[in-house]
Length: 407
Image (cartoon, rainbow, N blue to C red):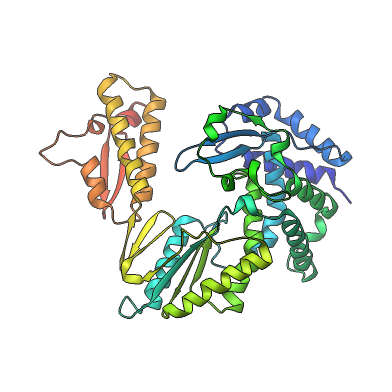
């Protein structure tokens, strides 16, 4: 039976989750102006069965690569977080350890460290032969079959509940949850989305990268929290096949990129063939023919924005370029503006420290030193007029001593 008081509390929690990192967006601000009323209205719609998904905003982004985005209305984002908070704890108990995307205390850095440890262990500290197979699924989100996905979600949830794994299951209204799952999975945002930008923005975007060109009954919008969760659910049978049926000890996946490490190159060729067949027959997916990588571990491998070499890892060129652009942009601001506002100073500190926090995980001390602690042949960075770069054990942090002293 539906507990309206508990559901309202859950909606408030979902709202606070959804607005994190989104408080400067117009869509969120409109909702926040009268958010209590909006949440109570949303509760009413859920209870009487009149909740309907609103039009998404469709646009193209080009950084880091050209991609189509369908941004859900903020009201629907609240529902996405509500669903995620309800069902993600169940799936977390059955997902394999080495599925890294959209999971708490996991992510790109965790995935990089895991694959690095795979190579190190398999090669016995880089002393024996081992090989790295890296594969990519072509047009993954656009080719997710909704019929298969819907069946998977419900059957996996029911299986988990039958096993008694989810101790909080009796407190949830599963009729409402399954109804929301159906609405989110089967929604086709291309039917009524609002196009932002020019049609020419889509020029050069492959049909396999757009929801407007997907086969009927296929495709999830990139960016939605539910899409990220459902993408893990969809590939869970594949993870299980790779880890348990094929017995792969050194296997890891981040969304549609996956890596296998093994001492036998011919074995990895067989794994590639078996993975191809499973993906096609069970999930209707294909491997990207131009993104097949199979090399000796000494050649290194690029995974999740890092270049993994024996005993060391380097940051990808894209991240390095963005760091340099960030430093140069703020140096230009400091050189051309006499006085920066407190908000600008905060943004400068946050931006630089964000990159420093990321780069410290890689072999980048010389890079950071070059652009933030320039030698005698170069002029001292203008940052020093506002703060100091604190260095400890090759870790760097930017402190705005003048701004912090004044505030």
